[in-house]
Picture 1 (tube, rainbow, N blue to C red):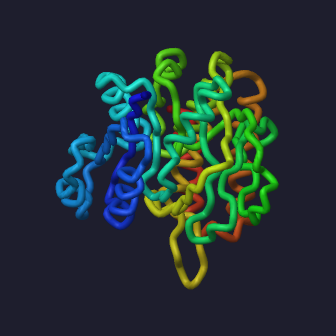
Picture 2: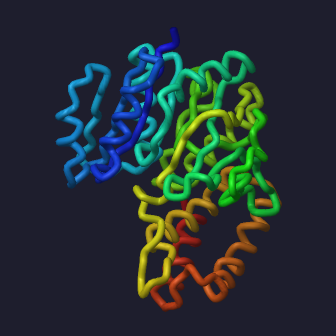
Length: 302
């Protein structure tokens, strides 16, 4: 039986953690170890973990917030060191059925692939799709746009297909994948870390990644990273998201390299400023404008 290391990162995750733990310990595949990497939470996250008596729980406590990529690497490396032959990178702002691990392992074996990710639904609107497969879109600066996002699920994407990108909200990978293509690039504090990883897997060509639709999985989108701020009854992109997303897209394109990537980087300077004016989810003030452009140049210097 495969030994699976589940790797999740907590940062002030008390609000979602108990239900996540319930889902993990209810799994029908019992040969699992849950590695929780805590990025210096200041709420009751560590107290909740301390109260959990399951011997399959391993908590790695950081004294500072190292970000998503580095914390994931801590958990992945520990899982491999402990003899896990598979790693399931998973968010804790999710809920899922008891056979999640079992089903992902089965489709992996049946289709002889190295990585598999499930269909993901919005937790707050469970009939709507968040992720149903994804491929890199060169015309969007290699952004992997989620197929089916916000669509009502009518079974239109209920077919197992090979994909180029999967979010690390839930991604099962054989340990050989990390040995062949490397771990998460720790320059990404958050956002684009999974994009960069998936791109390297895709370009390497030795490991097939599949999308699997026949499992219940619900994502509380944005609950941990606080991607949006509510202000005057309108939903705006938070400064943290704007900074990380702007900077990391530039850095990701630099990693890809080539003439097209650098032309697109040049175009993004103008596109970002146009978006500042036209996008209703971006606050129209000088501070936000400065943040967008500062983050752009930070990406160039990374």
